[in-house]
Amino acid sequence: MTHPNDKRILEEAVRLFLELEAAPEDRALQRERDTFLARGEAERAAYRKAVTGWTATGIKPRRNRLGIAVAVAILGAAALYGAEPLRIALLADVSTGLETAQGSLTSGDRVYLDAGTAIIDATAPEESVRAVTVLRGAAFFDVRKDARPFRVSLGEILVEAVGTAFETSIIDDSLSVEVAEGVVRVTGPEETWQLQAGERLHWSGGSGTLLPEVAPADVASWRQDQLTVQSMPVAQLVDILDRRIAGDVVVVGNGFAGRTVSGSFDLADPTGALEILAATQDARIVPARPFATLLIPRN
Image 1 (cartoon, rainbow, N blue to C red):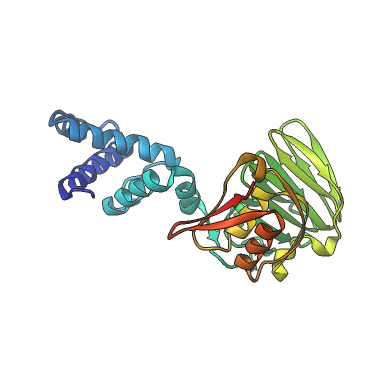
Image 2 (cartoon, rainbow, N blue to C red):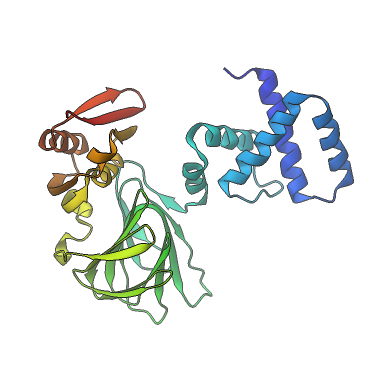
């Protein structure tokens, strides 16, 4: 349990840190910080937490941007859940929870978001490029014809189209692009691919691999609450189901996590789909309420 005095010290440390980041040459603030640090180890530890915790989120502190209470909550969440989920939550313009969503981007193009997805709608009216960044999850883009290219930043790769429809997804450390209509260009650090309808690219470990073709109608089938997979690792399939299940679903065992699965799953019933996966892979589901569900191989 956090003692009220500890919270007060952290609040003071966060305030000093944020104000000094905004005005690093302010001598009065510098003296106030030095006096605060000289008070004792609790103050010095709180200031270190403010510096390292906020830096880990990758967010530039700005004066008056956030209240001290909000900043303290952010630092606490970063310590509890890790900086990356927090960074995504703060950067995203649009995000989904356990349900899918659809709508129009600033550019006028249509976007369909899978559950557990977060994006940045980065297009500005005066810019000559339509731009989106996918931070997490899966997004299907229905791109209208326009003189301005449409670009999606997806981890290490860039996907570009003019008039087409395609899906991008992030699963763990892997990225994928599937084309339903038209042509897209995918650019990695050292290689470029031209993908047509039905073609798929998988990116992992710094390299891309073309996968067996898929029927264009099956691209982003999660829009109809269906998921058809071909030789997908158990861990990646569980990640997709996890977007629709409260709490975390954790796969136990690296060998089991890498085992591949093919088949169709009903995403309208993600818990039922998880049970089918467990039954077909000789695994058991162990609730670890309230935060997690474990998927454990029997052998």
